[in-house]
Length: 133
Image (cartoon, rainbow, N blue to C red; front, side, top):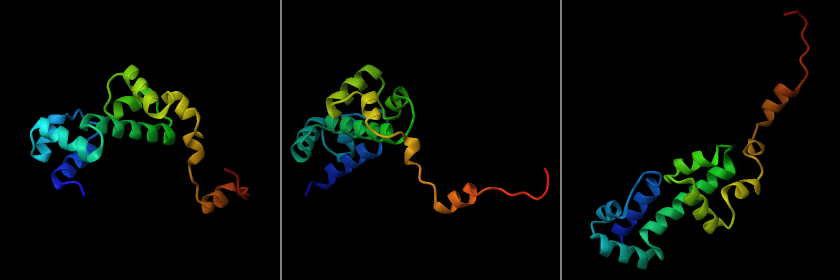
């Protein structure tokens, strides 16, 4: 299993992916120098700390694109990326589609809203009123 100090740094990256966090801060969380931390992180998890953080951001952006109707530029900023152009390029490299194409390949978020059957019965039945309003 990975060493506890590397897991602390990875958990920090998972928790604060939307913030401008750098390798220095992750290395400090692990209690290692920047160079040693980068080598150990890459050896243990198979990708550099910077690539891991970008992967987390892109995965979160993908989830937001699938499950919300928010604008792509808004999602870009919410996951901690600042440039829409670089976001689109990175997203396409990771998922094989642009954010707009990716969203179009899933049903709209409004179609995924689950309404309990009791509400459907209550609000779906005709209203017979005996008095005028």
